[in-house]
Image 1 (cartoon, one colour):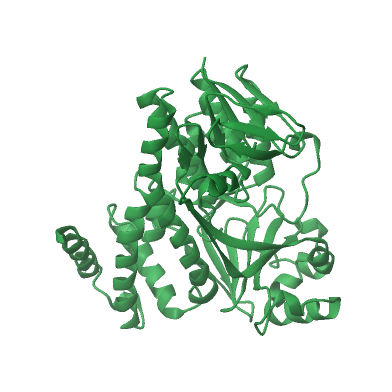
Image 2: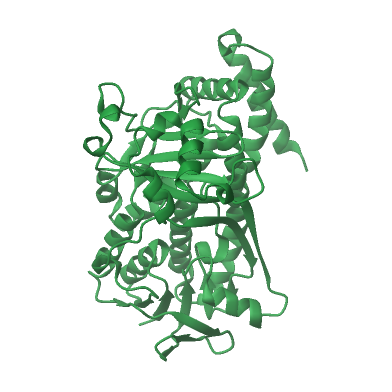
Length: 456
């Protein structure tokens, strides 16, 4: 029986252990933290996850899709909040049944660990931090003094991966680059209705439960994702320093209250523990990691965030990592446990696509922050919704990424960016999409893609 060591029992690592166990492969999973099923999840770093078709497809193959969707809250679109408190829903898709799902990171992780634990092939080792990896021998060292080597090792230990750091130090010509945004994030909370201030529980004061809420303010923004219990997990994205509004300026209660009362007045009434949460929860960083190569002679592979961490603004970090697992499994089906062959083809298939979603995620930060309140952009989204309602073969860039599990991210990026530029140009020339000939618009889109296919 082949034996694999997985570093990290997070979402990607625990899902991967299930896939490998189903193939009869023995798996030891090493996790630096304690068993999260027995510990309280630390506040302030959970950022709810948006589960969409790529992630659902990976869960489906291990029989966990229906269970997790039963624990999720559907989100049909982006609800935009102006400073004046006006709202507008921008649907994610014009097709019936296409939506994303808000899920608890901790809840999903615990469910995956529990499922993995059902397999005799899987053994978890908690409180075992990887402190080193020897690329020549394939030996991993842990904080307890234990050294481990198997047929191969797969690192799913996140953006700070100890295995990747070892590759950087030991592999000649290794390329690794992390680019941080000037912005960081702070997690906040809207509790269930019964725990809010009296003014926030008046009839009509609640906010839509089946939407991702965005308060776009050009240089910063706040979002809120619904939870199963009626609460919302909010995240403030704000410059660390230097800007007119920045975390470095919010150092006391008065400054925090003044900032939120000015920028998010409709949300403040829903957040009775705003100040406490603001100072209790940490301020996180946002960065994009790209590196290469991802494997060392079949001895080790980087997967998920350890190879390609992305900012969270396309809701694809988890979905992309789950797709990593599904692609890797398909290659094990083809090559068996010839790990060198599996890893080489895996890198060829995935690198171009993970680079593409990393770029799109960063672009979407500026779209969510700056453009969703722009009337031209809103007309474009209305036009895209109408196109999707009218033509089954039309997909917006967002839909290509989110609802087309069969379409590589790199193709979605190329086709989507060209399509977006055309539609923005069209919508900039009209005051209302009702004046547009929808058939003519689709004809121009089809011509755009036809011309692109003819390019050398």
